[in-house]
Image (cartoon, rainbow, N blue to C red; front, side, top):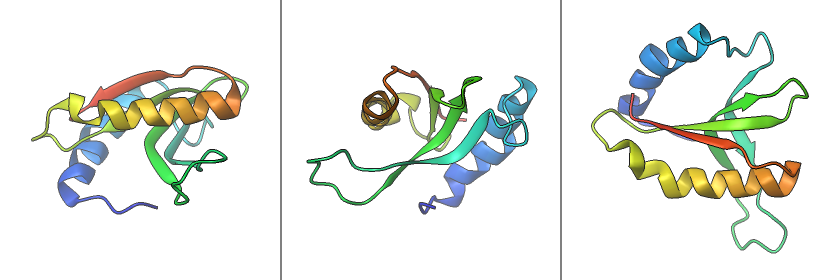
Length: 105
C-alpha cells in the first residue's frame, strides 16, 4: 500500500468512502477496490507498482472507473495527469477506457 498523508486519508475516510458506499460501491459487494495496484507496462522504465486510490468495478469485475483523491486543501485537478496515466494502464490491461473521477474531498 502506498503511503498517504493523514490529510489525504481524512477526506477519503470521512467523505469519499461514505459517498461511494451511498452510491452502492463497496468492497463487500466486489464493486470497489481501494488502492488498486497498477503494474508497469512492458517496456516502461518505472518498475514500481502504482496505486489508484479507488477502482470501481463493472459486473465482469473489470475496472470501469477510477477515483483519484487529493487532500481537501489541493485543487482536485492536481491529480489529473496521475489519473490519466492510471487510465492508460487500465486500458492497456483490460482493453477498455475507464471513467476518471477527481476529488479533493
